[in-house]
Amino acid sequence: MRVTNTAMSNEVLNLSARLRRFRAAYGEHRAAEGRGIEKVSELLTLPYLATGPFAKQWAVRARTFDRFVRTTLKERAKEVASRPVTILDLGAGSGWLCYRVVRAGHRAIAMDIRTDAIDGLAAGKAYHSHLPRRFSRVAASFDGIPLAAASVDIAVFNASLHYTFDLVAVIREACRVVTSGGRIAILDSPFYASASAGEAMIDEKQRTGAITFGDRADDLLGLPFLEYLTPERLHNAVADLSWHRHRVRYPLWYELRPLVARLERRRPPSRFDLWEARVP
Image (cartoon, rainbow, N blue to C red; front, top):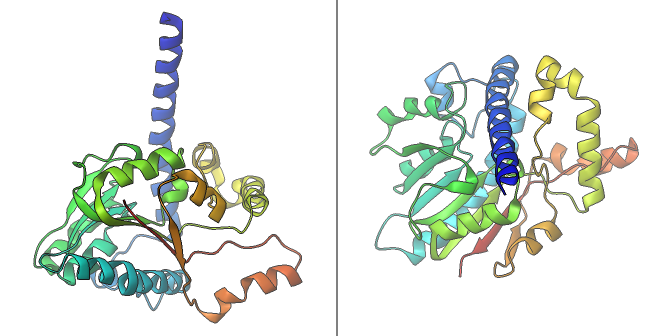
């Protein structure tokens, strides 16, 4: 038993060290890409960033966010009309989603494992002077949310669920902190129609990792993240959750990606959309 416990302890320590290296390498990579928002005025525009090298990507994410507001948030607000909605933003980054929902009169908690000022939690400090009330910023992982049971109305995986190691455990943990009748929403995680398409993406990512990430490739690609979702994966994760996809109308160039991929004989691309489930 002592040997087994020692082996498990070493495995946990090794994973912890790899996660630390991943966080550092991820922040460095984002900075090298120019992801950090240097001007507060730019930070305040997210997700409606109209200029710069990442405006095209944000145009996609803005459509998902708008659909989330029109459906998930609006519906939950009607159900709890006597008070603001409380949202837990999982994978919050700078907290731009929290900024938006607090401006709309609700409450928010930004949670992420990254605390850097590039586009991690530390960057969210810039929002505080532009809000009627501050949102909380919590450094934690999805599998151990430091909140009481049934303490939020909506848990939003914000371009982040594909970074989990254990889909079942993470969704169950989100269910724990969401009140009965509340929602779990998935924004901007890559979905594929089949597992084979998702595995093809992983293979391609591994093959091109050195070119894309340089010396950081080992740290960024060495962890066993989920990497992608399929409808089947999601529906099979937790039996008592029923998931609904809200299809989002994205820009034309995005909608044409499957056709372009077929014509160029490349693997099928992923799709985002908004996925939502009501917590029993």
